[in-house]
Image (cartoon, rainbow, N blue to C red; front, side, top):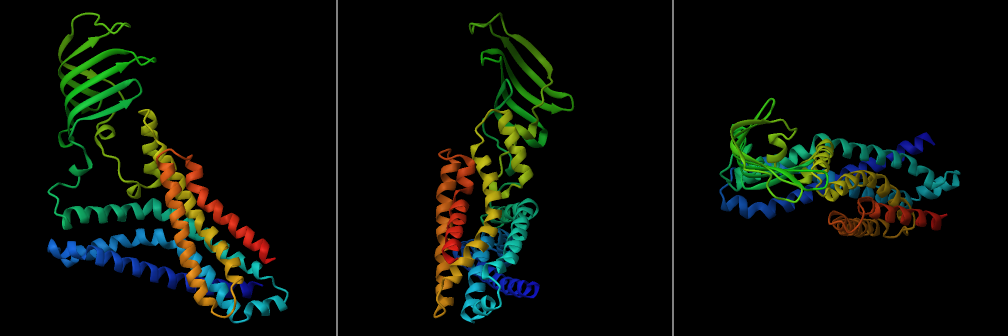
Length: 363
């Protein structure tokens, strides 16, 4: 049995490598032709174009790995079925579905590698490709570290404080044109700070040239405003918390997603999109196991005549169907129309149920 498992695993990994490599090469070619006009029009150096496309490869591998598992699973058992090897195994008392165990192990390893890649590699390469696209290809006149900050008016809330900031100057560690609203537990305003600028120091914020007003419970002023030249405000809000622009989800690691979720909860802002994104990453990793299992009963039901052609066609249609359904319900989850767990795992559960049904019919 161990020899057969190693043989099936070898065939599976061979088809997996060929399938994944072919799909990545195809997608890379499409990306190259899609960007060719931009490269030529903007007279991009070939080294920048190559670096951009190179940094796109890890993201493509991440996106195509579950589809490659499905393709390898279907092709492996289709070839065994076409060569009468399944019949020989049945004659030897070995059930074909017992040979699926190494595929499930490979699927679990693949899912784990996807999680590790999404933590340490894919966000980094996605960010680099985005930076090269903006600065070296589209020639945006903006420093990269400055581009991570917003300079327009913004609102920021944490605990019982709401900040309104006219301008952020990250290089100088200061804010210009700041209003701070301090609320009580019921949301009634207690104080309001209006300052010309605020700078971040080790003990907190140094407010300069401003006024502070106190409010009565009925919303009226308790007295004239208090004018000050300098005043320290010891609050946990940091400059990078309120000035940094949230990265796109595909440029964030798992730890960054967790940290951003905590910030949103502290600010009492909606976090449904990131909670759905976090569940979607786990579900996408689990899709490797599900796709490996889905392809086995499908391949065993194919006829020996034309089995490979039908296998490839079925793989393409199944993979496309998974992508369409997953994208639709994930979009509903991002907009709060579905719970995060349902939006992320719904397609996986449907394919897992389909795999169990086909396996039952196969018995």
